[in-house]
Image (tube, rainbow, N blue to C red; front, side, top):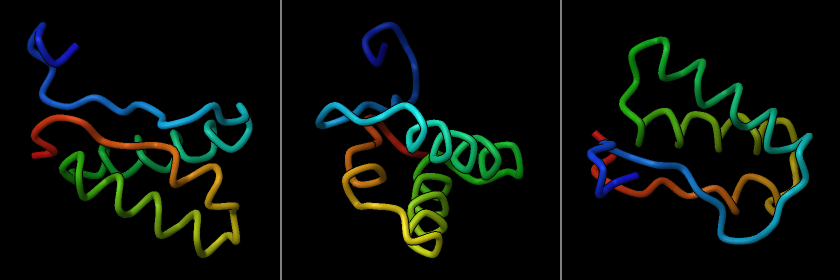
Length: 69
């Protein structure tokens, strides 16, 4: 996707369950919709997952690749 021109891509470092990924994805896209850069949105989503006591197994698996701006 990056080679095709996407500015950034979110991928996982290991297999994660769908429910946790869904929650993280909603938080990430909500932050993007509110004007955050991809890097800011990822950080915001991670912090919220920590506040919700989500397992690091879920939120730490998701990584932002690309410029993040």
